[in-house]
Length: 404
Image (cartoon, rainbow, N blue to C red; front, side, top):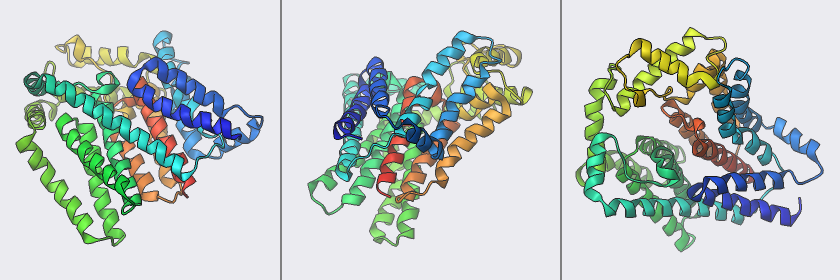
């Protein structure tokens, strides 16, 4: 592969990261440029062989193929085609990353730093918006509303991005500690993003953050690193929630709303406008729908109308705006393609754990965070979620393999 082609790929990756925060159209165009450049060579047979010999790549493409097959029995072809359009990166990006492009350690560091800086800039912008209307935001947290965030106010996906930026910042700090000011800047960024996660108070990001802290403690103990590091992280796990409760109003109000909603969702009782109560009922709906047609499921084009039918039969008092699809990616694939879809989705998420890389604990932690996020989220049903999942996992795969 020519150096100029590698440069185009390098900068198209940066443009994709920028586009994620700027424009859906720009994100689509930059993905197309990246993919086309990756395929701009004559040795396509070797390229496809690399794809087929890499379980991480071909297994991810199954997340597109499964919904594709369900079109055979989906009645709503328009919705089915729309979902395929959204999920297309799950096929295209793995094929592109099978390209033999490679970067130097310095270039990988630059890409990771760009990602960290973009997420940090997004958090600062979100804080600026928050400071413009503090009291209204605080009140909103008592009614299942959150502060404004990038990604067109998709606070769930953005909070997960922030947690990954904390992970990358901490990892880069550990790898470069004692090598000048850059390591301290990375550490300060990680601390700020951790604070911001508590201000945003989105559970997806916070859960990922605390899982990272716990796994990091176990890793430090296994490596017999300086005890001060593991002790500091253990203290953070215990102290941060308490400190956030006392000094961060958004975090405190989110906990209050969660406790209020808890009484409803623990028994799957319907609460009009209730966030968690509605999610638990949607999970119940998804499970019963999967069991009702375990062989093939409802078809991806018909998940929403079939779920609404279940709500009408079991929760006739439910308001139209609360009739959502099952709030778990596992159950989305189970509802769309039955038990085979559920099992294949599980298989895809387990494949990365068998990959051998130099930084195995970091790779496994990243994929564990992905799997946990999909338990109560449907990130693969929206453009931002599909891109974030496929891009972060594949970029990390390429990065960690380069350092193997």
